[in-house]
Amino acid sequence: MDEKMVIEDAKRLLIQNRKTVGSWTFTVPSPHEYRHQWLWDSCFHAIALRHFDTAAAEKELLSLVASQHRNGMVPHESKYVLFGIKLPYTSRITQPPLIARAALDVYKKSRNKDFLRQIFPKLQLYHKWLEEEREIGNVLKVVDSNESGEDNSVIWDDEFTVPVHKTYLRWFTTYMPGFPQLAMIKSVKATAIYADALESMAGLARILGNKSLSSHYSEKHSKVVAAMKEAFKQKDRTYCSLTHNGKPIPYRTNSMFSPLFAAAITKKEAKSLVEGHLLNEREFWTPYPIPTVAISEKKFSAKGYWRGPMWINVNWIIYRGLLRYGFKDVAEQLLQKTIAAIKKSGFREYYNPLTGEGLGAKDFSWSALVMDMILQK
Ligand code: GLC
Image (cartoon, rainbow, N blue to C red; front, side):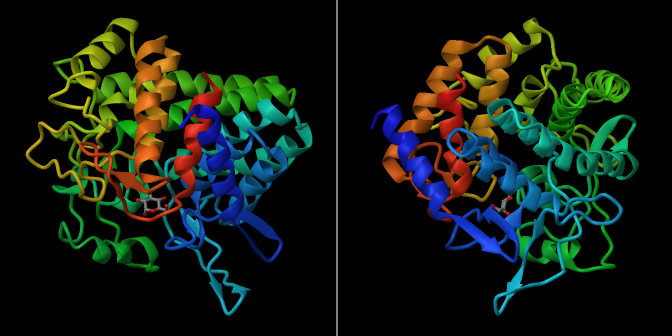
């Protein structure tokens, strides 16, 4: 299977998974299981769609922000339909803030300023909400495991939330108005994505000719990057998330590579992260990398939901980070191993990182991110 074929298959998948609800058109994560619109999924979809249909990529993001709450929050899940009618209800949490990054990437392909003029005010409102409701000491907190996007990750095991392994009970905190949200993680991964989003906001404001707003977001970006180093750096120079009372979460997970995505660490730190951990066969360099949790962890589970398997969106985030630091060879190896998993098992939700076996939902849209990995190199 060569790269051209993978791109064609990914295109077909994204076209097949498009859905229209009322006046909105977007891509469902999978036609078999997740039939609504999801926040970070749609950002990933738009980033892939922009390579062959910029209008569809723009529609995807405009549909996403159409579900924005009055206070600025963009919910992680929206567009529920009952008997063909769109319900006004959405979830009450958000997801990693990738929208500004996706909007900028789409613009880079379309050069359509009208789209930016439409979406930018909504992004400003979203960022204001993030600043007021999710920032804590200039880093980002996540108040629910579903909000982290890694619903059942080991990083939530010791957090104050409904009992571990009863994932579905956690859904009360996600969907039920008024149900107490008592969990809180200061997340290195969400903060890295946030820092990148602020840089993207500065870029978008610059393109729209608003210099003072652009400086505002650039300054904010610098503050977040500085706070990120301060808050998350450990004695061994790796980075990890913190519990609600500020203790480092000890498990080695894919989150440790997220500072690469935000270009937040020194070249030397990046080198030791990549050589010491990413390429370490006893930790993350498995036959089908990158496992969400290092295989050296007791909690590693090759098929456990977010507790070990490889996910293509995680690979995409790390791939971008590798390219930002010039690790071209490692990035290429990661891409080829990602293609090998797709070749073996198709576009699945996640994969066994030891065998490449496909797991979870079939025809999973964000696995089409492989197209962006190929086309951005
Ligand atoms: C699962 C994933 C989440 C994703 C959603 C839709 O809940 O954990 O990250 O957004 O499915 O694909």
